[in-house]
Amino acid sequence: MNPATGKLASVLFLSMLTGALASVAAANSAPQHCQQQIYAAPDGRLTPHVIGRVPKSAEPIVGFEIIRGKPLVALPHQLIVFADKSVNELAVPETVSGLSFNQESRLVLQTATGFLTVGDTGLKPDKTMSRTLHGRLYGSGSPVFVEVRAHQGVLQFVARKQDGSPFLIASLKGKLHAASWNELGLAAVVGDSLYVWQAGAKNIVRLVTDEGLSAARDVVLIGSNRAVVTLRTTVLLITSETMTVVMGMPLAHCRFQQSVLYLLDGRTGLIWSLVGLDQLGTRKG
Image: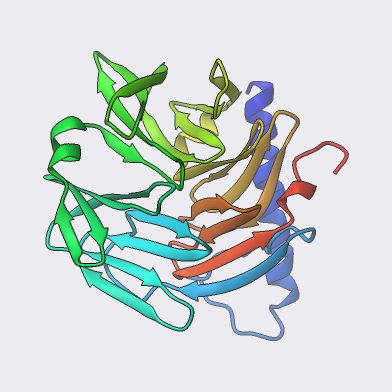
């Protein structure tokens, strides 16, 4: 086992141990069932809030974004929009595979046949995007979108300007497990490595390599050489200094906006906001 792998294994073990101790402490006050999962509460330095819950559905979650503090969740045939006092559901006739938006809050659904934009009049096909883009689209409030496309066994991360013209950010070999693109920049898990690119930087940075990252479900950049990665049951903060367990959460999706980390629990449907992430991720902390 290499040092990086040992480090990640130790972090995950501590997360499970913390959750197990909490479960033992509650054993005398609540009935236990074999189906229950180990729960690890958020790091005590964070301020957590539950801000909503996705209506129960048999369909998987294929997209999660935050616009001005309000969650949006995409299912294969439905878009769920959270307002101040309501949850609105919009049926989508085509099969959705992704959800993105830009700085002007232009909302784009990626489908099996192309792209749909969401406006005041509802859904409408975007023929220009469907004709120009052929890869996976990402965007979480940045002025431009990023397209990830495969070319001769290599993943190309391409920024798309307003007129659709491309700007190549990086080319990486390996399987894409997770990626996101926000106003801070790009975060991507390719193969067993986590890559980050801060907007405007000259080069992409390989922040860490570990075989455990091949189980990544989602990722988001939260600062300079700082990213949150969600695995099968755990949410990790990975920095140039250390790895920190944020909390235990199964099948989580993550986004970051205005210094707030948002997590969607893929099993319960609960949506969390966590404040105070700047206190984590350093050896001193």
